[in-house]
Image 1 (cartoon, rainbow, N blue to C red):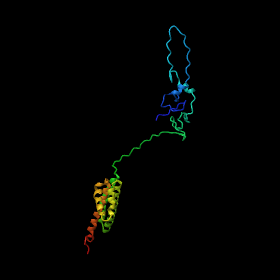
Image 2: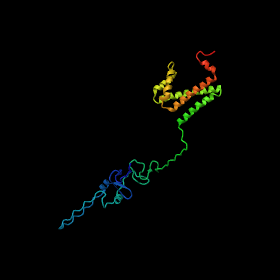
Image 3: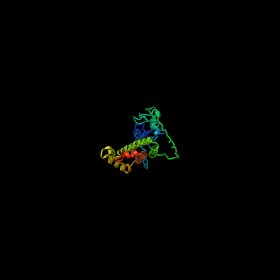
Image 4: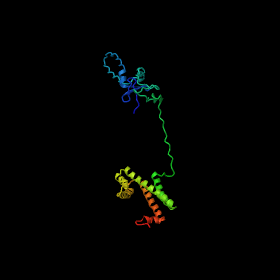
Length: 256
């Protein structure tokens, strides 16, 4: 936006039209100057001579040769154009900030521009791991850690199994929630129906085999869910291996 150039005669911005300027930086519309200038007095006609004299050249108009803007503006009464209280430069009607010196009448102080410098970023010697990479590392570590805990004692096996089951349930809930957030409502509803009698097992199996493998685009959550599911199976295998009687009781027709 061009800076305002307030005419000292009419008090309007003359930045977009022909204008004149004196040595003090004041402006006036060319049309205002032409309207205020007194027409030059006509010189008396020259006495006729034998040879006709050449016609005089037309007087220049506007701010032509021989016209001093300093002389004119020094005599012209400046209108009240909302002058700046600091530098006296005219401002547009209703303006509070001077475009010449930056003085703000509302705050009573001059506005300044502060040039800020960007702080240099520290370079890292080692690449930073993303949150997804950290989650995958934690999931794989849990997959190894829980079976090792289960091998310690029967009590540790029970604790490892409880942790694995809770982990798997939370991972399944995350997968169902991700399906709804990704607008895969069909698979989200199918995942919720795992608790429905008769069809719950089929819904769970379809959701796990398809959506938790290739249907979802959330690779980190898929790795987390399958790691938790494998942890449950491995800990259950350790439990049955250390307790053959328990495995026999769970068989159809088992027991004493």
